[in-house]
Image (tube, rainbow over all chains, first blue to last red; front, side, top):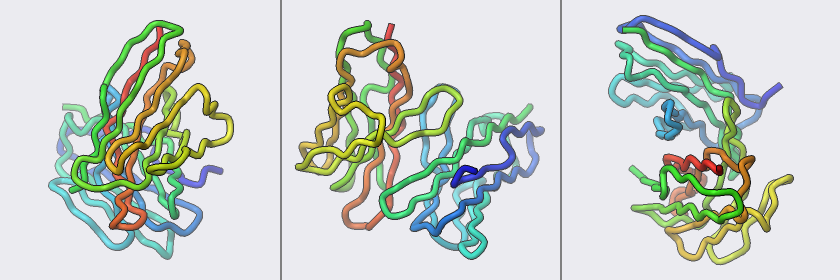
Length: 107
Length: 116
């Protein structure tokens, strides 16, 4: 079992739909990252959070420390949101990455 | 927010040559930088941890003589892939830890290396 589990692995949705990607981890953390990776490979840091909720534009990230679970939500999804979304847990200096969720938004 | 850049974003080189990839923290000082590698359809994996002014610490299975890491200043770390082979073709990503803000890490955009 991976230390960081993401679900779903793949997700296809229609433009405008509300998207939720889940991340569970097995040990305590100092921070949790959500990253976006586009088809060309480039990585964009979306969020780093250690508690509560953060919002940036149409993206919302939440974390429940007690349940060791985080979610990434995308409101009013758009085809340009199509990418791989990666959850990574940060414990001291060590970062463990999930395998990513491949999101495809259809126009 | 904190910004980390990498250069180049893409590089194609011939087998046997060496390639240098730079990782810079643009608006903060990074005592520690990390180098990751991602093979197709796989997770990012830590290769090495680079501390300013000291030798890098390599993860098991990563050849330190092949992947030379230099962290000469608080804003720059370099990864040199020596005598590159096609199996070194991968996506290389760095992250930098903000010395002021504890364990927060910020990721670079990555470098796509293709060895022909």
